[in-house]
Image 1 (spheres, rainbow, N blue to C red):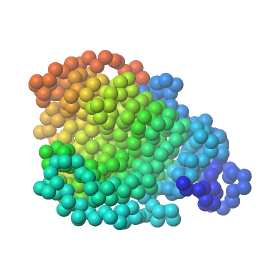
Image 2 (spheres, one colour; image 1 turned 120 degrees about the horizontal axis):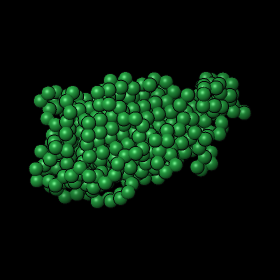
Image 3 (cartoon, rainbow, N blue to C red; image 1 turned 30 degrees about the vertical axis):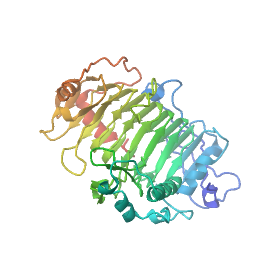
Image 4 (cartoon, one colour; image 1 turned 180 degrees about the vertical axis):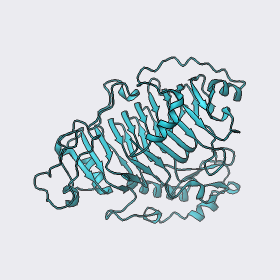
Length: 442
């Protein structure tokens, strides 16, 4: 575990008010170095009706943090120290300055695959051993796959950073955020993340699955932001993308393009009471997953709200939903069936999903059909109203039925959203979302 070194201690500051009062240094800290002022958002809590994260007591994050639990961080070591400081369960506010690289060594120097590669892992030998003509469709096993897994475990230990409950993480400036790793919100309650840029959670050692699709596929491990069994989470005004190493530039191996990125923001494994608002997801393939398996019956959990988000040039999963009561309203979708991230579908209607989709806008080339906006993944119902495609009203349930003539699909999802503010008229959505979605866009 990283310790709180002197440079980090000089940056620990008192959170004196929610209105922007000046910060004082902790007793014993040097007066040298920058002293940050508070961010007007850092002690804000989620409004009482702002989506599912407002249910069951609402979401406060670290709003109740003591002055000694307000931290300013500028690198991975300081981030890890701030997230580990204090008593277990104590509320905290973490203020992020600049883009923090999560794939670094103990001296904060960026590292690559060689820093994690197991000595027994040889990628070219791996390709020869597991070529479909040699290995076939059986699950991978043997020394090379074991060495790949050890390499992956070493990377994971560095680039995945857990966030404790009762925490607010907020960006302080136009480029504040994280790159080359994952923030993991797992088995905790009450987290707020705002005004942050997430980029390029890059997997150096993706796994080959010979049984994935007809010809096998490469599968990456890391999301930029991942929720697992997390409750009361609010993600607001954040920007997500793949950075300078997009998957469309990766090599082809074993006959399939390699995948080095997984999701941008995934909400899985019994997570509940989540609101994702005013975020910008761009230039990515499999973007947002709600529910991780058709076999993992998450029952009455996976209650998620997406509103005023912008999915720009995203291939699919915006979102793809299994189980859960998910409200998707006042969002903007822009993309094409051409280019490095062609539109496959936007909203995935998965097994036992109960999606309410209203007042959203799609902007695509004229030849893209409505049937490409939604996709059926063993779901049985979709409630949709007042959605637009290229300036015209579109019936998403009718489009889903047209694409799946043999399926039995209804409009009754068994619930009606009540936790939401005023829903904007569809005609106003594109302008508002373009102006306000993403980090620093307020």
